[in-house]
Length: 94
Image (tube, rainbow, N blue to C red; front, side, top):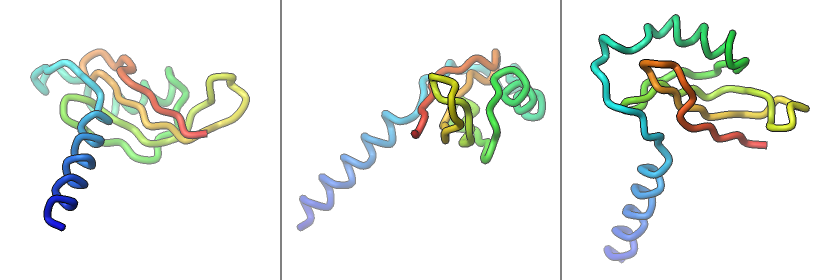
């Protein structure tokens, strides 16, 4: 039983580790201020923000955005470079 729990914990941990984006390390004094980043996300990228967090070296949102065909809004999880504001990784849930 102990081996099964250990294996399950390792699988879960490896899945969580691979889910994060690879943002470059930079001192936080070089990061865009949170409010400026949120404005960029809404005004330039067109996302609606449900939740905004810092994840490691990235800014991350959970919210809504247009699907690839730009025909409907879908839930999204998006990671941003905190220095430039560029999208590093995006996952959409149809």
